[in-house]
Structures are given as C-alpha cells and as structure tokens.
Amino acid sequence: MTGAPGVVAHMIVGRRAELYLADALASIADVCTHAVINDNSGDADGSNTTIIGASAFARSGRLTHLRTTFVDFSTARNACIDATPPEFAGGWALFADADEVHGGELAHMAALLGRLPADADALDGYSRNFIGSFDYWNTLHRRLRFFRLAPGRRWEGGVHERLAPLGRRVAVPAVGAHYGHVCTPRDEVERERLYKSLGQQVTLLDKASLEQITPQLVWGEQLRDALPFRGSHPAAARATIARLRAQWADTFADVARIVAQQSLADKIRNRARAANYAQTIWFRNLDASLRLGFTAKA
Image 1 (cartoon, rainbow, N blue to C red):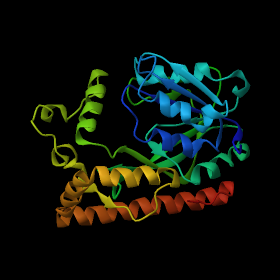
Image 2 (image 1 turned 180 degrees about the vertical axis):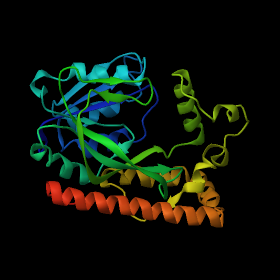
Image 3 (image 1 turned 120 degrees about the horizontal axis):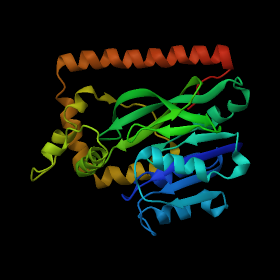
Image 4 (image 1 turned 30 degrees about the vertical axis):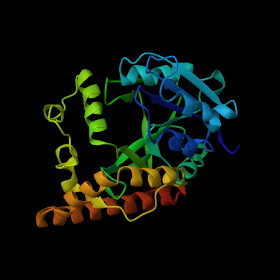
C-alpha cells in the first residue's frame, strides 16, 4: 500500500446506483490510508454495497462502512467525521465524491500536505465538470480536496454544504474529472427531485411530466457553454467510459448535435471562457511553483 499516512477519505453514497463509484474508489485507494463511506440509502443492502465491498479499501481492511438514513448532505458528511477512526484525529481528510475520478494529480497533492504552512486548514484543487457526454465540459471550478480534521470542524448547509470553521485555504492547479452530469436525462431529473426536497430551487421538474425527457430539454441551455475535451480521461475511468460510450451512443450523438448548433456568439464566448480557464490554471501553477514547489502533473 502506498497511501499517504494520516489521510482518510470521506465519501457518501445514496439509494441510486453510482455509475462511477468503483472508478472513484480505485482512483483514491493509493492516496488514502483509510476510507469512511456513508451509505445513507437507509437500506441494509444498498445498491452500492457490492461495489464498496469489492474496493481495495474493503479488501485490505481499510474501510469504515456506515449505513444511515439520509437527512441532508451536511448530516451525511458529519457522520463520516464522527466515524473516523481515532488514529486519524488531527490528520487530513479527503473530501471525495462518488462521481469524481482522479488521475495522478491527487497523489501529487497528497505529497504536498506535510509541507503546508501550519495555519493552512485546506488544500484545494480544481474540478472539470463534464456535461452530457465525455467529449464536452462546461466549467472548471476551484474545489475543496483535503482538509485538516480538527475539533469542532463541521459541515453546514442542506445541499451545497460548507465546512466550518475553516481558516486558510491553499490552492494548487490539480484538476480532477467530475462525471456527475454524464448520465441519462432521467437520472438528471431524479437528482433535481432530491435537491427540490431539500429546499433548493430547480428548473427541470416542470419538464419532467413530458412523455420523453430528451438531452435537449435537460442540457440544451447548458450545452451552449460546452467546450470540447481534448485531454485524457483518468485511467481508473477508461473502462467505464468505453462501456457507457457504447451503451449511451444515441444520447451522446444527440448531445453532439446540440453542441454543433452553438451560435457564433456562443462560440466566441466559449473561446474567451476557455482562454480564461487556461489563464487561471497558468497563474495558479506559477504561484504554487514559487510558493510551494508544486508543479501541475496529470
């Protein structure tokens, strides 16, 4: 095992089968010493149980597997904090999502943890959000990755949970792949139903009563911002990506047709956005290199 000492992964899963869970777990298994996974489906044998049990964490005895009933996202994540084995107290936790898959960038970040200033409570990276297809993405945003486990540090908020109190946050240009919006159109609507139940304003449910929920109805507006992806997907996700490309070929073809209909104004705006994202990563890389000796790796 090559896990970084003191790093424990925190992840929550729900009732729905998580398409990328096996890949997400595989991509963090050599970075984290232990994983706390909260299955908050309320089921004794949830739809994700088999995948969790087959993970490297479970096979090597590095897993704490909780089974709770979902209240909201903060409650679910706080349960992970509470269930963290005591030997990790004062160490680092990885904020992990079941639909985010990492490449070598995560280990590169973990290697930096021991060299962070004592007042740094969190190490942030970036997340590339794929939309409708593995060929397109629409946002690149700063994302909490690692945080110090400290007394009194809790998650707050029902949907877009926040960690508090949290002091200094350090950021490096390490980019993970978020595949949560590469799903079926109906899966997207089901996600909005959950968010609505938690009090968040949603837009898709008015369309959910239609006989057919199409990629145009679900992602049409967002795909105006779609940018082509010309990089490499994380190795841990490639088998799943190949399988879903075949399984969802018709949906992906629809997504490609929608993107091809971007107006000239859309294309100009998207080129400017792509340039802005590239500039952000370039400056972040320069800053991290000078301050921390960190240079972005794939």
